[in-house]
Image (cartoon, rainbow, N blue to C red; front, side, top):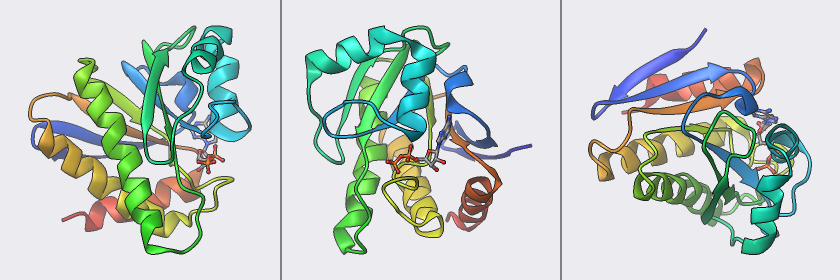
Length: 178
Ligand code: ADP
């Protein structure tokens, strides 16, 4: 199961699954600003990747909302983890801007490191409360724009959606993506 669209020569792929199993060169973590680990996808990535990831997070210390930092992938298949901090949804216009920043800054970092395939979870749509039908089009538009800004940099940008509800929201948004 999955959906795919070619954007400027880069495969934009949606799959339902567990991002800790992704075989992309980088996976993105939906972190908190203290890079302290926690529940959801953050906890899953640290559990699967082992303590080396947290050791590097402690050295970095902090990441503002909308920005991104990079660490080792530890025991994950992915070489590196990009940690980005999504906005806590408050229903304000800056929510979408900050969410888009997460995707753009993560892909800027991946391109700068020469990482040609990147897997994202659905940032902010768990504990941070961003409604899936609103987050999905923001996420896809931001990724599409970042791909265009880095011509030839990426073979694949993948969304690994946890559960059918998340997958469906992104599949509908991908169909509408201009
Ligand atoms: P946030 O605090 O940014 O909302 P969460 O981890 O609570 O982060 O949720 C973000 C999204 O990640 C949610 O859609 C959640 O279902 C999803 N998620 C949780 N575990 C995994 C996993 N192992 N792989 C991919 N996505 C996951």
